[in-house]
Image (cartoon, rainbow, N blue to C red; front, side, top):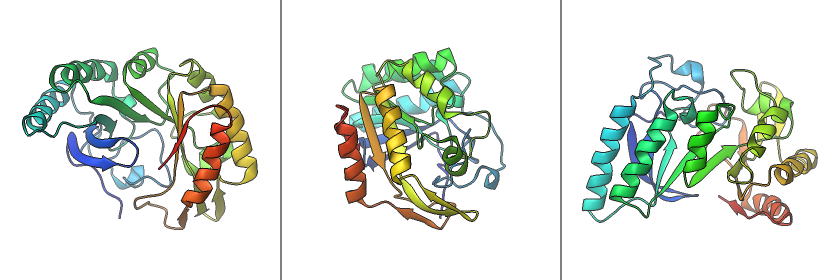
Length: 256
């Protein structure tokens, strides 16, 4: 079953992609708040969680992060990475840049070897303050699940205006200083076939990857419960085949 993160700071958990990861949730602890409503989201559907839609305050995040990092360092188990994820899209926070500044300062003070990562769906990168903040973290991991608007509408269900063309234009402003992340999956949703591993999909996506020229690509498939049940995990072999095509472009690609 899908589930929410019930704390501002959660974990640490062993991440497939990032190592020992301490999570930071800027979104409400009792509801989901996201600019996407992905059919594969481990937090469930947006309208399943109609509770209070209040972002966690910058001060609360800073104080709780200091407390937990201090305890982990004192126990000799500092995190490999501090990861912004949680119950929705972290960059929607109105003071996201300030939170990132606080986090980097705490990291530098308490556990300088840790990396700061942000998992984002890239819907807020039209905001200059969000782009600035993302440029300052170690790993800004930005989503692009398809080269086709129709597939994005089916799989990611954007809650506002969204086009792949505009998103790619904004991703190019990072001048390669980003990690591009893509979820590959197959299945069915509301009577429509879902499969972004088809050759037409992969070929078009690869053209955009080459255009964006990220420093790294991450490809992955389902690992946790989803709100849409008729979805299928893509095999590691299929993911490795896609990754090989990315690396043929001269771009490192990891499979999780």
